Amino acid sequence: MLGSRDAQNTVYPTGLESLDVRRRTWIEDAWRHVSGERLRDLITGLVDIPSPTGDEGPLATHIADTLRATGCHAAVQPLDDRQANAWARLTGDGTGPDLMLYAPIDTLTVGEESEDVPWIGPELREDMRPAATVYDDLVTGLGASNPKGHAACVMMAVEAISRAGVPLTGDLVAAFGAGGMPTNARPVGTRHNTGQGVGCSFLLEQGVWTDYAVIAKPGWTVSWDEVGLVWFEVTVGGTHTYAGSRHRLPYDNAIARAGEVAGYLEKWFEEYAERHTSGTVAPQGIVSSIRGGWPRMAAVTPAVCTLMVDLRISPDITPMRAKREFMDALAALRAASPGLDVRAEMVLAIPGTRTPRGSWIHRSATAAWEALEGRAHEVIAGNSGATDANILRGRGIPTVRIGMPKVAEAPFEIDFARGMNTVSLPAMERLTRHLIRTAVDTVTRTRGEVAEAEEGAVA
Image (cartoon, rainbow, N blue to C red; front, side, top):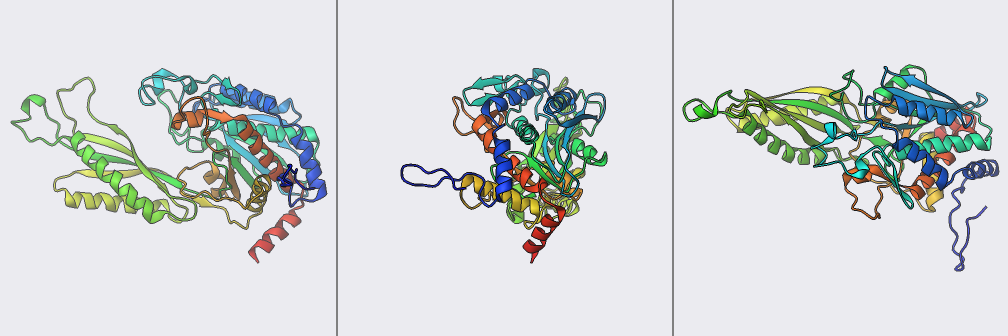
């Protein structure tokens, strides 16, 4: 089956190239159940239910109920009384590999002034709140693209395959993880470990496990490697003293010293990134927050000031190697700044990971991308974003990442927040078609077929 042709006899891709007749038919049957209207209903339903990290329970229940209504076996998996995953399963006959389509469901910010302002800006815009607004083919609202637009595509893909009645050999699992954002507990949280992939880890620990996985997160490319991250708490010492005695007593302001440290690290991060750029990753670092002193008492200086640092790491280095590089950088700063009291502690570590490019899931997802685009796969390099793909790969599940690009054209300026909070329905449809093709291409084969293909790739 060839693609369509225009008046100039140009052939356009069908998205089905390289597949046999049976799988083309099954995929086309599933694609018929995908529509912009249904995707709009799914995404507005997700955006309208707040799900900041630590409070995903209501959204997990909504997802499970929605998928259960389409014929899937679906369940809510509580982590505590407020945080929960959701997952659903279409069962195969047991002869093929199992595949997980995965998306996190928590939002990076909360959508309430009490927690977001002033750090996000002077006020909350419309797109920063958990309420969907439709602008023709665009939908805005907190997390409308990342992560909820991607979660909606996973829901649509599994729903379409279920409605089409595709005969599966392996199980198709749709999983929606709580705590996928890079954060510890919010001020109103109950557990310290509510983010950093805690939902994905719990999902696997409780037996929701597959042979392969595809994570839906931003970027219209098939990514097989990803940065990890380490966090450091940097403590800068100084002298506790009083404004009225500055000219009479020893004076060493920890806050001013912390500024020197932050400026030094910002330059060091650039050198670090250049040293560790490889594959598709270019790991970055930032100084993310500062804490020191009594806001109620401007008359005195604190004895210490602390900085938080996020340092991304490539799959080629361990958290311990990154720690030693960071500590060496601080030692060099101390040597160049006599009297500077600065020390650090690594307080979080998630290794970077990689899936072999000969893996079945990488080959299938790449073939789907090329079929939909009608050209060779375009690798996007220079990435420094970390996702739950590291949790999946770290537990031994070969995983690739595929998603939507940031919306480029809109009736408003697209900054970082609006990029997270604006999704294109046509882009959602394209991603959903990719997920369906990759899923059907995988869970309608025997394990022997897949193993043979992987062995051929290695050879």
